[in-house]
Length: 223
Image 1: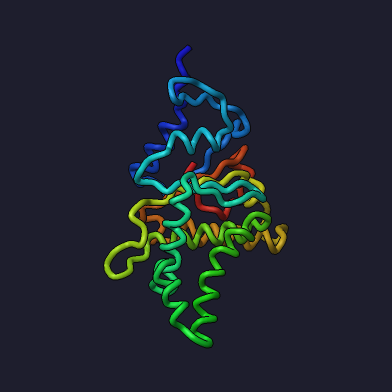
Image 2 (image 1 turned 45 degrees about the horizontal axis):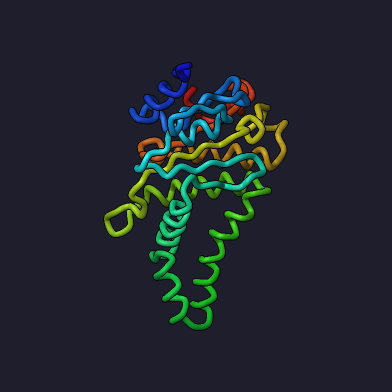
């Protein structure tokens, strides 16, 4: 039996590859299983696994976030690449250079360098049970990715971030009817996806939700 050709996958790929949009929403039967052809065989997998395997490309750093789960990198080495880039973005050094500077520093300078190293790692761990922190950290990764340092980007690859449960992270309601935490997440995403630097950049975000109508109207997405 031939594997089905999913039209939504081709359409999403065209949107992202053409730069028509940098944030899009995949809606519908997002909790179904999808047929993945791999290594000469076929298996049915959740949508997030189907997308990550379908978009496993050498020029992409693919990151997934599941509600109340970890921020996950498809390849372990990509985590280190983003970590190094984040350090360069914050202090101008990668992790190796930061370790050397830390050994040579004393007093307050040493404490400050220690704190830089802890912020990223602590945020990555803290994101597991804190969706607001997870979204802010992912937004910062995109900021870091497109910032030029010494005339070049700290990351050679582009980021592709997939976020599950977007309708629960960004629920539709009037602003007055939302909790403070919901408002904070909506503001993070609004600033993130409407930022001209992100819109005109090469990083992309895909959000999974059962229905577009369940997403807050202030969040700027492509359908």
